[in-house]
Length: 94
Image 1 (cartoon, one colour):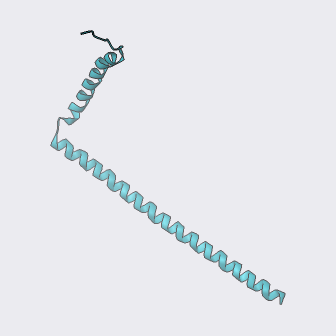
Image 2 (cartoon, rainbow, N blue to C red):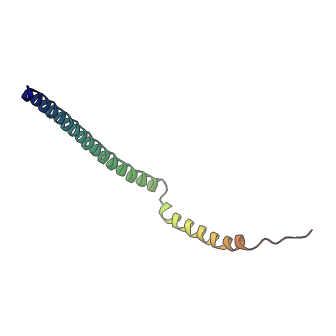
Image 3 (tube, rainbow, N blue to C red):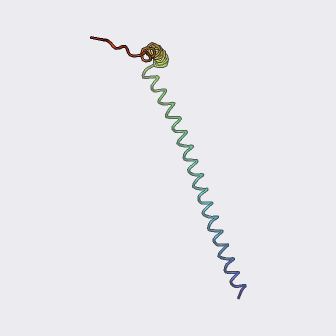
């Protein structure tokens, strides 16, 4: 009788192990599919980013030159305004 109990317990344990292995394999398969989808989406995103840049360059060919110029002007303006903001307020009597 004891052997029957051990056999049943062994079979149940083996079945439980097989079920967990199958669940693990299924989860790994889903993870691989998700990774492939992410890789596809990232490649598509890169392609669309390049296409957007190309179309923007066609729309405004001077943008490549004017952006750094605008940033330089903004930096100069910021440099001129910062000392004015840091100075203590002068109270004027009317």
